[in-house]
Length: 427
Image (cartoon, rainbow, N blue to C red; front, top):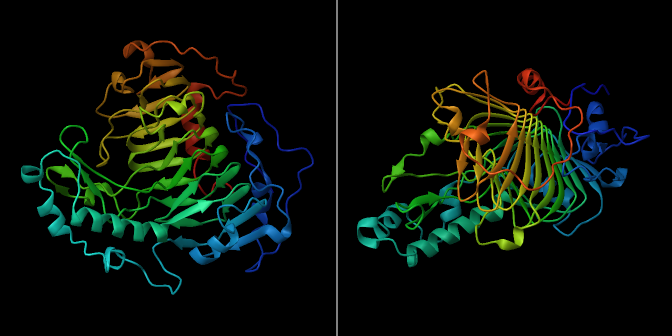
C-alpha cells in the first residue's frame, strides 16, 4: 500500500510494526489497498483526537464488509458492543431503503400518525398561533412521524469501531450517532440526511424558524474520535429546493458533523464539506455549562466549499482550526455568512487558514455569538494576509495550543488541501 505524502499539523508516525490486515469477510475479499488504512490510528495525524485507535486491534472474526443497512447494523452489533471491529463499506448504503429493498418516503413514515402538512401549516400559522411553544395534535403527529424516520436512518456506533469506505463507498441519508468512545470514520461520501418533518419553532431568532433533526455524524458525549478523509454534501437535496413557509426557509438539513454533550478529544482531518448551511457545531447550548473543560477539537486540512456558516461554530470548547481551505465563488445558492463562530465561552486558535470568498470582506470571517476569544495567525483572505482577530476585535485565548509540527505554510495550503482532502484519496 502506498500512502500519500503530505505535510501534517502534528508530529505523528504510523504505529510501529503495523501490518496491513489480510482478512476475508462474510461477503467477499476486502479491497487489498484499504486494509492498511483501516488499521491506522489517529496518531498519523495527531491533534486532540490523536489517541484514537478505533477498531485497529480487530481480529479477522470481527472484520466485516457491508453493503446495505441490515448488514451494517449486524456488523456493529448494537450500541454496547465494545469489541474492536473494522467495518468496510462497499458501494452505496441508502438508509431510506428498507430490508426488502423498498425506498421509504415521507408518506411511509407518516402512515398511521395522522400528520398532514397542510393541517400543520394551518394550525401553527404565526398570525393565529403566535410565539408560544407548539402543542396540540398536529405537532404530536409530526413528532411521531419524525420518530418513525429516525428509527430507520439513525445508527448508533459502539466503542472501538473503525468504519472505512472502500473506493466509491457512499452513505446516503443516514445519521451516525457516536455516544461511545474510540471511533474512527474514514473515506466515506455522506449525502446529508434529509428530515422529512421539520418543526416550526416560533421562538427561534424572534421571527421563528424551521428546524430539523439528523446530522451526517453526531458525536454526543464520546471521547477519542477521528473523522478523516470523508466528503459531506447535500447531494440530491440542495437547500435551493427547500421553499419557504411562514416567510422562513423550510430547512430539511441540520449539521454535517456536530459535537455536543461534552464530546471531547476529537480530530477532524482532510475532509470535504460542500454545499451545506449549518456545517459544524461544537457545543449545542449556552446553558450546558457541563461542557466547560471538554469539547477539545482539532480541525485541520479540510476543504469547506460553498458552506454557509459554522465552520466551526463553538461554545465552551478549546478548538484548533489549522490549515483549512474555504472556497465560495459567489455563484452557489449557498451564500457565505461567516467561517468561525464564537459562541459562549468559546476559544479558537486559528493558524495558516486560507479563505477565498467572493462578495465578502475579511471582517466576515468571524461572527461573535456571545463569545470573544480568538487568536489567529497566518490567515489569508482573497490572496491578502489579514488578522481576522484584529478586524473583529477579539480577545486573546487563555490556553496554550500544542505547538504544531509539520505545519503547512499558508502559501501551500490551497494546493495541499485541494489535492488531498475528501473521500477516495485513500485508495
